[in-house]
Amino acid sequence: MKKLAVYIFIILLGTFCFNVSAFSAEQKAASYPEDVDTQEILDDEYSPEDIDIEKMYRDLPVPNFKYMHNIDPGEYQDTMYSTWSPYPLFRLTAPLFFKTIAIEPGYYLLTPREHDGAWYILFKEAGKVKYIVPCYKKEMVPMDFYKNNLPQVKMTKVQLIREKFLKVVGKNVKSSKRQPIPDTYLEASDMDNNFISIIVYWGNYRYYFVLRSIQL
Image (cartoon, rainbow, N blue to C red; front, side, top):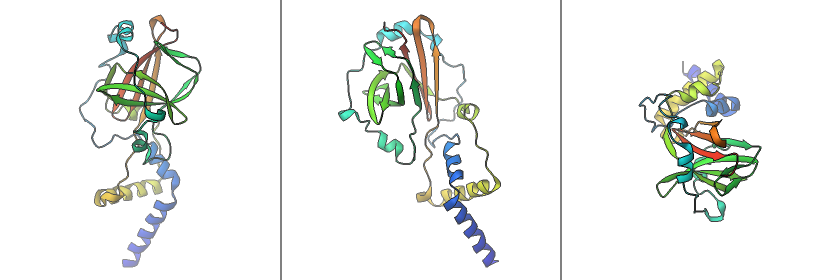
């Protein structure tokens, strides 16, 4: 019996060390951080059509702050547990505008950040903050949104056994508990009068902001 237990432990340990695909699958699986509010939010609770987009756009100020050396100081904390960027990638093929800010075509990592009590989206390119635009709303992501909108990874029997083993270890050995990277999603939709509504889903929250295809 003792030998059998040793053999089982060796098999599980080997699976833990060498099954890289299972680790990637777990990182991609939809998950909420532990501090998630379990209160249900309806999908149609809020939409950009509920407000006067043009008035809101005109009222929002152009950000007047910058980051030292254009480095996002919170990025280290966000990426220390992941091997790839935890931010949604935004591919822009034509210029977009927020008042005097002209966002050139390119690939940007969109990152929500708070500054003086207000929320902003950082457009980051090659690790540097290139543009900052204000958000006009932040709210909780509806429950099961990621589960319903992100592809779910199917695991093999060996991967499922390993998953159960890791959960047992995580519950009993605090130092071994891994931090899941936030789930992300991105929505963009055309609106009247050349406005474009963009919603960044990042972890427990989603952030609304608006740009224009023609400068106003």
